[in-house]
Length: 559
Image (cartoon, rainbow, N blue to C red; front, side, top):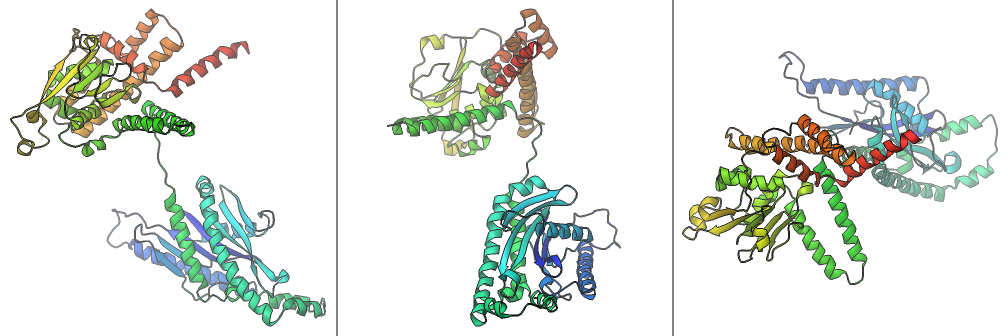
């Protein structure tokens, strides 16, 4: 994390002062163009460290010469090299000294110190506060008091500040910083309180002050004498600064690793919106079942159904977890079924017809569904991976059945369905031919009442087959190609939906839009059928956004 943590103190003689500072130094990126005679990065860093130490020593010595430093304003001696911790995982070094090693950070920390102990305070003068700007950085500050038997009011004022240029990151880290800084502060306060009670038991300062004679002549000397106590003497902690270095270093490391940034390129896709909507609906339904009386059995049944749907919509990594032989990709499925049968099956999938797989291997059938569902938008996928009874087409467009389930007559005679029967080759053993040799283990019979030709379109299928038949393209490349084709045609679906459903244009105008979208020509009928089917996969968020925009546009002229 590009931030800096500092402990600050309000001296009664010199005002706000920086006592201790910890910063993170990232390793320099390697420069391949560096010449042999150039200094290595490690040497440059060591030189920078010595310069930082020299800056601190010069600041301390010059301040001492001016009489602007006292024991309460100093943490480490001018000759102290400071503390260094190295993160072996990232190579980041955490350096601690009284002042930052870089001159440009000195004024930034100085300003944060002054503001945290003067004008930027919360009610009660103890607690967290946030302030800053783009020029001088943003600051998370936590002010607190430390007990001191010799100080005015028997306490001294301190603050711990974290300075960073990233405002959003610092605000998002507020709960984390507050929780862990309070632990450090409470440790300092409890240790100082023990010393305070011990000193008060030996010599109660309240009674001494009540009995002393106040004189304007000796008052400055009294202030000067009482102001010189350091934090080390207040806590009697022999390794105080080493302990603070460990705490601040861990805080910088933990705060930097708890939040990560992700680059989102453009608006979320329709598949992402549909998955978010489905997850929200499932959570709402589950909460309703849990709140209903006697809903335990219903909740369990609903959960099992939703889990089946979730498993079907998982990433392709789920293929490795399926037992037995399985299809690994669309290319593998095409090789097993043959080019003609695969095109027929893919055509039915893209047209929205019901695809029924019937066999005794649930894992094989589910793997087929997993690779085939990549042809469709997520919103068009409704699946029952494996069932012992037939489910109607309005419930699912992917249906897996056990081998003894009969297909109703109205389904087998319909052109809007395709049946794939999977039968085992009994003459082969799995151990002999291997689990991945699906061709040798099973026979696949495809049947459908459809009489329309499937070799013309749609255009998306034609382009996909070109990619699948090109052996020079890997499976990953083909997957990215399919993703681009789906996004291209999903954008056409959005235009057609806006033009025909929302605007209510006529058939002639719609035909012009189809020609503009490149959906006419060979396979025009299949292209139009695909576009209309994919409209059902649009997210509710997109549809409601379009309708709201149209209504707003209709109201604006009258207003």
